[in-house]
Length: 135
Image 1 (cartoon, helix red, strand yellow):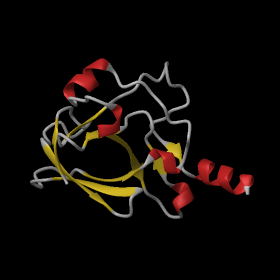
Image 2: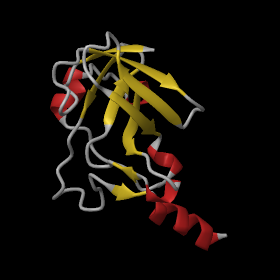
Image 3: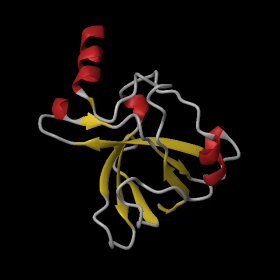
Image 4: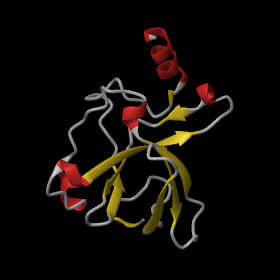
């Protein structure tokens, strides 16, 4: 699915349109639609790793994403993949938010003072360990 970037992706401000492709419903790829930049990310549904990932969308993001209701928005996080998977990282501090109804998206940078539990590079291994310990 193609989306217009209503809010820039940090480091890829010149990218105006992206293509989001689902790999399995929890993992996605995101690329620059016209291929003019090196933008290429693997994204993850945050609920796959943590159930406490809740934040207030800043008012400017609500406006830019033309959000009429929370249900039309999907939040995904950028992953840095490594081998083994436990050595991979997720950016919980700067999620990508997609308005699938209007086909616009943007990156939201959250206030780390307000959300101290969110990190730019949170190791996936700590969530996998928590799930194993709960079993």
